Length: 314
Image (tube, rainbow, N blue to C red; front, side, top):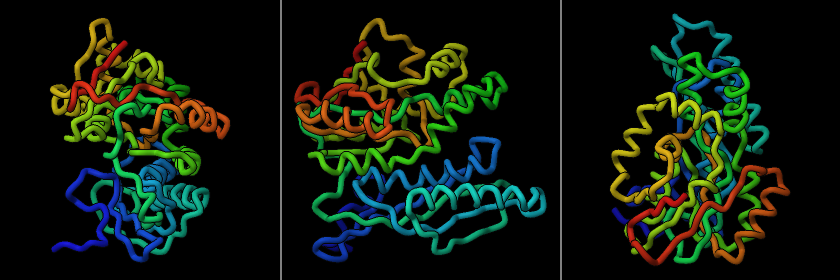
């Protein structure tokens, strides 16, 4: 079935679906939930909500409504844990200005939490993860390495400071960069989540006859992630991402393998990867930093050469 009002559907690997309901209004629809990645239930609730809302921000939209998705082992876990998860989620929704309108819960052997989210955008201003153009600069808004450090936390090898650092990053909404970039000629955008930076960058160039250059030394990375990657504390998802996309990535000599692994590291509630004209990138970066997005950095550019390939440079 074809519908001209379906602007973004399952035919592309975008962050959300988009459906036009009026000449000046499109709905953005997404859903995301997962098992706990941190021990504190309140933090888990906040991270899960920030992660789910990120898909709407990446599409250039404003999240408006949400419904809770809850799986909980009623007989094996104290109900106070669920209360804290939901309190964290509600507080994060309130911060985002999102109205919780309902949800659904089921009994399960393992706790899971997330949201179904509805947002809006002007149909002409919806951002996709494809659409970048040769000469575009690439801006990344959050550091990488949450998956590696999270693995170290589970192995009880990361200290409290390292854990607090990634929890703080994952709880941060992508609202500010989304609001700031709305005033710029952004050609493409995606959020960095389970496929890692290089996996999502590969989706961004797609089959459009373009290539990409990423300067590994310019990519913001938690320094602890490099240390733990050197110790072999690599999530299984990192290897899957690398196996799947290695044929698209040309790694220059001299780049440490530990850093390459972090660039494939699956992220939870990661930052936005923004493609826009190079002559606007410096201004956007300065505005992001002024707005509190202090880790944002220009990490590379889209090229007309080496189509379908990412050149990873020092």
